[in-house]
Length: 153
Picture 1 (cartoon, rainbow, N blue to C red):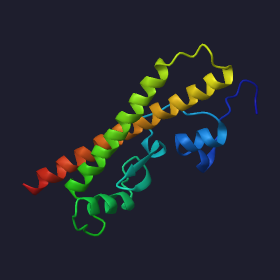
Picture 2: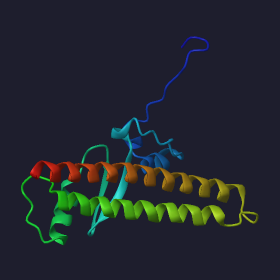
Picture 3: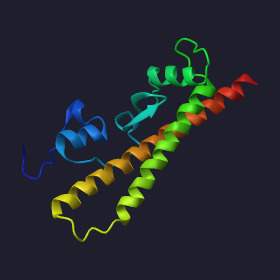
């Protein structure tokens, strides 16, 4: 390595999502909406947990949402109704994370140790990151559903 040369660290697969990065390395990466394939969030829909982000919709979420809507799922196909149900759940969860973030930021921290404050700041960073990923992902799903409906007419 040459003097003044920049060094990059690749954390590999264990840092693909913010919560894994926090659990493995003790930091939350900055949210970068231009690099969606690495920006993932955890989402629960109709009793199923999955990691979402980018332009993928996990099969398990499609199946659970289809069952909740009492729709028969066409193999490998995402219907507008199922996409909208999953998107609404993602927006709802993003709102919950944002409210929790606001509530935690308003709590008086005078009696807290430096370690507690740092832990709290990491937790808030993770909630903010997850909320941003979920909103962007859900917006894409809603757009997909709208496009599918326009094609049908």
